[in-house]
Length: 464
Image (cartoon, rainbow, N blue to C red; front, top):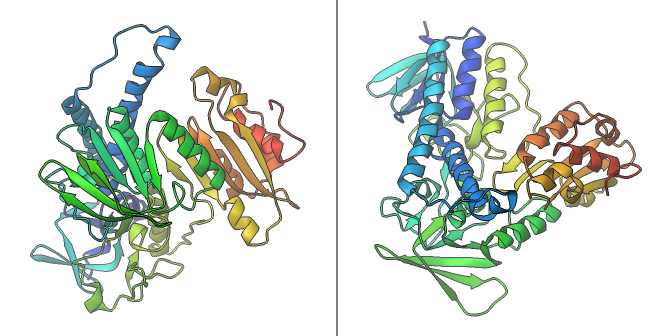
């Protein structure tokens, strides 16, 4: 007789959420995690600590640049980097402790250690092998590497996103390789702390794949804040000493190799699935060409009784995508119908201003031959945004030309990561732009800009 109905490998957002849902549905559940704390990359060395630093440094920026204009007269604050890191660690501790509480509350066993799967229905942790009816792999991802660049977080000169959270001191010069979400967020943190930050990106736009209007506006705003960009550049390698580094890059359009000096180099070239040590090859678990675990529409792998969710399978590497899959696979295991609407998964960049997107981009829809209409509204017409000095940016809604159904949206502006969910709900229920436009929005709020963009899909906005 099996000891468990399900054992989940990995206690990140996908894994722990799945465990809670499994327990709620009456399944005897265990979760395997080798870290000292639960929460995975996101809570320990990813989403949560980076947001703590983003918040702290945004407060610093406000004090240095905007307080005086609001009539708040005082000396500019000094940075106690050790205390800021302590604050960050405290935020992490509160969140990881909260997850451990959820495990206890829902009577989920934490099997401490690293898992291997010797056979379907069996999970080994340390010297003990546990029997289970089902296994859910939620082992997440790790920072990807770059040829010619050796990351050593312990030395603190060439680091990945994990090492960037614990630097011994704020560097004078930082080079960020990659203009994606991680690079721009952490680059913003250190720019606000006083570092001279240069971002080197292989593509010709920041946040590749994002709406082009957003890309242009976002880069312009970040440049205004002090970040420097070198676009269309292929990094050839990094030469590092104990305290310095030289970044060599080649312009894609030709020309001589260039060199950048840096105190710290942050390698932010994305993440890759992590499933090492599980024994998937021996089990015969089918993988994709990109090294992800292949699953069907019910998150089942090629081996009966083994499922996979989150960063280790196809799709955007986002905590909330993993959470949705975690809840859905729990429903499947409990005999219910599990569902994830992959067309309505928002993405957010937590800089200032925030950037949030959902659905398809204007270019993608046009390339597919879709007839669309676009409603756009600038935060310059939003009273609340003006009041806090964040009137740069806009809301953009894309709707079907014939039916007016919302197909996608992009927001760059204050609280974009929260406002995007109004559009997510609209898309989930198949709403039209007019449905949003006819919904009363409180004044003065940032969300009025969403309504104005919806109005722009029809007869036109009021405040533009």
